[in-house]
Image (tube, rainbow, N blue to C red; front, side, top):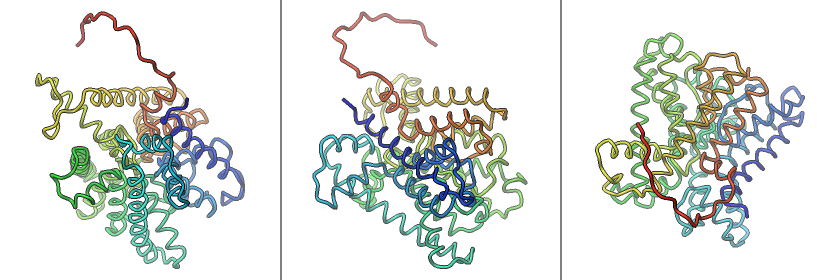
Length: 439
C-alpha cells in the first residue's frame, strides 16, 4: 500500500514529467528548437521544486509559452498538487477522502487530520491575497522602469510575485534583481513575499486568527517567527560587514543601498534565489555564511526548503540540554517530545549526508572550485536557486545529480528515506542493552 509520503513524492514526479514534456516542445523556446531531455527535465524539476537554478537564461531562452509553463509549474510545485485537488473538490462539492486528507497532512506537515479542509481553504486564500498584492506593486514598478504597457507589466508583476511567494527565484528580467538593487519598492516587495512564503501557511493563519497576540500563538509559530527574525538580522549584519568594501558587489553603493542589498541577500538566501548583487562576486566568507543560511532554509509548511528553522532550533536546544546536563529539551516553557527531537536530528544528519554525497560526486564530474560546488549543491538541496555560475556549465552527469538533489530537498529527507525504504514492521523482540564508547 502506498504511504502518504510516497503519494506526495509521486505527485511531484508527475508534475515534473508533465513539465518536462511541455518544455521539450520547440515552441517553448525563443529559437523554436527543443532544449533536449536533460535540460527540459532540469528546468521542470527546478520549477516544480521551486529552486530557481537554471541552465539557460529564463528571460531570453524561453518563449512566452515556455515562461507560462514555468510559471504554472512554480505555482503547482510551491503549493503542492493536493492544494489544487482540494480547490477543485471545494468548487465541485466533492467530498475529500481520508487518503487525500493523509496526503494533505504529509504535504503541509500538519500534526492532526482535523481542520485540514479549513486549513487548505485558508492556504488558497492567503496565497491569492499575497500574490495579487505583490503582482500589483511589482507591475507598477516594472511599468515605470521598463516602460511596459499594462498587459506586459501585469505579466512581469505576476510572474515575479508568484516566483517570490513560492520561494522559486525564477526571473524574466535577464539579470535577476541586480538592476533594482537600489529600488526599495521592488526589493522590499519581493523580500516580504519571500519571507511570508517561507514562514509557513500555518504561522500566517495563526497570526491572523490570533490577531497577532504573541502569547496566544502556538509554540511552533513563536519558534518559527523568532528564528526567521534572528536569521534575517544575523544574515543582514554578516553580509553588510563582509561585503561593505567589496568592489564586485557593494563597494560602489551608497550606505542605504548597501543596507538594502544586505537585507535582501539575507532574505533570499533562505530558499528564494533572487539576487540584487552578483552572487559569483561574493567573498568566500560571505559565500560560507550564505551556504549556512541556505542549509537552514525556511519554516515547515511553507514554500521554502532546507532543513527548516524549527528543526535547526530543536537540534540546538537538544545540544544545549545535553551540554548543560538537562534531561528534557525545553522550549518556551514546554517539553519537546523525544520522538520529535530524534526526527530533527535525523533530518539534519540525512541532509548533511545528502549534501556531502552530491558534493563528492560533483568534485569528480566537474572541474570547478570546491566552494562553487558546495554552494551549488546546498542551493539545490535548500531549493534556493542562488548560483556562483556553475549550473549552466554542468556536465550531463552533474545536471542529473542536481536534479536528484533538488527533488530530495523539496520532498524532504525523511520522506525520501521513507520512499526508498521498505514498509517497516514492529519488531516483536527487544535485544539486551549494552553501551559503547563514544566521543
